[in-house]
Length: 64
Image (cartoon, rainbow, N blue to C red):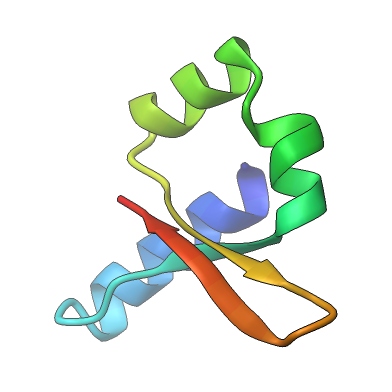
């Protein structure tokens, strides 16, 4: 969260019209990011995510 928060702050200052998304491989999302604590943390800090499939190089879903 620390590095993401830094990037989000910097982007808001330099290019406020852009939106930062955290890119996460689908297996990592399924194993880690579905935990209640993590979901609450992402919601609290308004982290937008995209989940992608490494093997097919496609975006599986956008989470806002």
